Length: 378
Ligand code: GDD
Ligand code: MN
Image 1 (cartoon, helix red, strand yellow):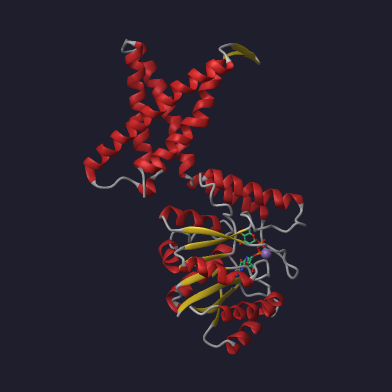
Image 2 (spheres, rainbow, N blue to C red):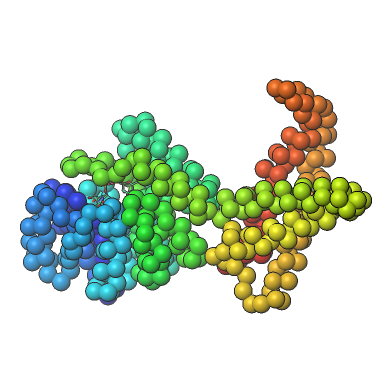
């Protein structure tokens, strides 16, 4: 039988643990292929947790474990728990789960069924059909949670993952083993986002099952909302291929403009030639920056020939963008007209607005999609 280990970080959760541990083991009855075990990572709680842990170790000998680690945040607790599990318990799957009854242990079998079906990483999602957040959450809490997830989903251009911050998950241990060193520094709650982002970049199979998140009734939350928001936004900004891709595109636009201007003014090149040469220089710079920065986790390998082949593909995709811009401008002018309007002290031509809109609505999604599918595929 394969081991499924539930890792429970705890800080002053004695009241919850008393009932939660037996309730988790209760699920064993429904599992014929899995050996359910628990590892508590406690941070020297001051509410008698230690004594309780000793009792549980005796009662559930060989399937209940605990370690004590300094209180350095939820992420750090998981890091310590996973490291210990890999070297000492050797499970096939590890669970992340809160110890305050926010996560229903009855869901455990459903997570494991997804693993059996081939998933590497199962997320308990509050935002897919059938899932929920507490109805009585204060407005600002709902807003943060919903808005936060939307920003992350768009930031990473992965809208199909609905719950990035969920703390109820089942993960094949090979994934954890591969990523443990990379997620080591993320001590706070941002650990959840970092682990999922890196899992997706690995190309592992991620699926979601619905969960109904309940508010704790005993003890207190340890989350520092302000720190959490800052860490999460920062992580998204620094690690999103999509945001990097947009930055590279903007740099490309500047390079295009500056080189075209220079060729016309200093080299006295003909304007059409200067413009197309400027465009191609931007294409080269975009290709290099995307390869070594935006999509560095899928960098092209295999020497000069692979590079050339990818570069040719990249040029064809760029040609596609040019055609989209032509069509977009053509239809926008037909539909909305060609005019000039005043804004503050500037006069703006309608074509400028159309160009920006066509790039934002069509060119960016098209090229991001094509780069991922054709040039930098897994
Ligand atoms: N050992 C240890 N050390 N445990 C900790 C620490 C720590 O520094 N910080 C929190 N925990 C434990 C808590 O005791 C609890 O069992 C679990 O981690 C979750 O902590 P809560 O304080 O209850 O978190 P929350 O309910 O505010 O946050 C939930 O929602 C977040 C955002 O959606 C959790 O599900 C998070 O995982 C989730 O990211
Ligand atoms: Mn909680």
